Length: 113
Length: 111
Image (cartoon, rainbow over all chains, first blue to last red; front, side, top):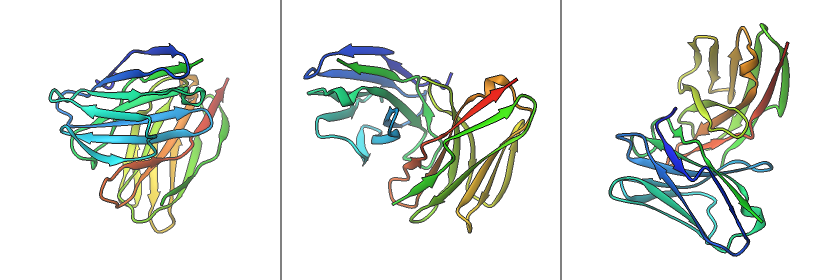
C-alpha cells in the first residue's frame, strides 16, 4: 500500500459524459501527478500540481482538466468522453516539486461505452 | 525529448536470474527509476539510480551507465510472483523533472 488513495476504483459511463476522478496523496506529500495508461500507449503523463498550483503539463487533452485543493487532494475532470478515453488513470504523489520518487495510487479504470 | 527502449517481453524459469535492459536518449539526465507493475495494478517503486554503478536491494539490483545511456534491472531467485511488467523511467533535466516511462517489459516466470 503506497498511501495514495483513488476513487472510484471502476467507472463505466457513456460517450459524451463527464466524470471526476479523485486522488488523495500520501500524508505530507505536496505534489500530485496524473497519468493515463492504455494498452497501446503505456503510461502517459497528464499533469502535475504542487501545493495547489499547476506545475507541469504533459499530453493532456483540452477536454481534461484538474485541480488540487487546499487539503492537497486532487481531482481530474474528463468531459465529452470518447471511446478512446477508456483507460486506467493513475494518480501519484511525491514529497516535493518533482525531484522525489513518485508513489502511485491503485488507479481508476474508466470504461466509456 | 526522451526516447526509452525496453524489450517487450521476456520469459524465465522460477529460481533463475533475469536481466531486463533499458536504453535511453534524453536531453539531460537526472535519474532513472524502475517500477514493477502487476496487471491492472499500480506501478510499485523498485529502485532509483542517478550515479553510475550497481544498486542492490535484496533480490533486485539496478545498474546504470550514464555514458552509454543504459540501465538494467537484475532479478535473482525468481519467484512466480515476479511475473509482472517492469517499467524503466528516465528523468531529464527540464524544469519540471517529470520522468518519462518506457512501454515496459512483460516478464513471465514459469515453473
